[in-house]
Image (cartoon, rainbow, N blue to C red; front, side, top):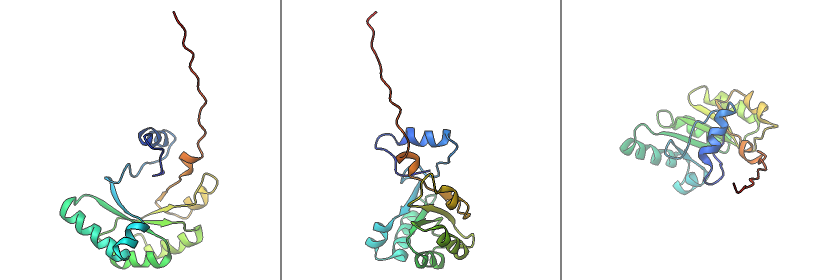
Length: 156
């Protein structure tokens, strides 16, 4: 799946992914909170961002799940140390397959996992074979070829 869809075409592109055999684990930010690097930096760190999001979810939307983007093995360790019961999924952003294997050992099945960033249709198999739960592939949309259609009007 990909979260980077063409403006105004999300519904159609997500449906195309499903028709092609892919899975949409999220449609929008209302399905799951995604703490990205900007949120983490703004909050003052990964722990602070998780606590703020968890406080919001607890008070306002208890069924909403939280996903945290990690940029390093150190980030993964921080989420694992304090995120249990708060975080649902860890995104491994721009990790190479060897780093993903290392991260999965640390995560030890305690969180869902997603590989994202730098993954395309040529490299997806290497990422999928690491054992992550989800692989996010922007190339599903960015590398798709447009169909050249034309329409001729005829007066009858």
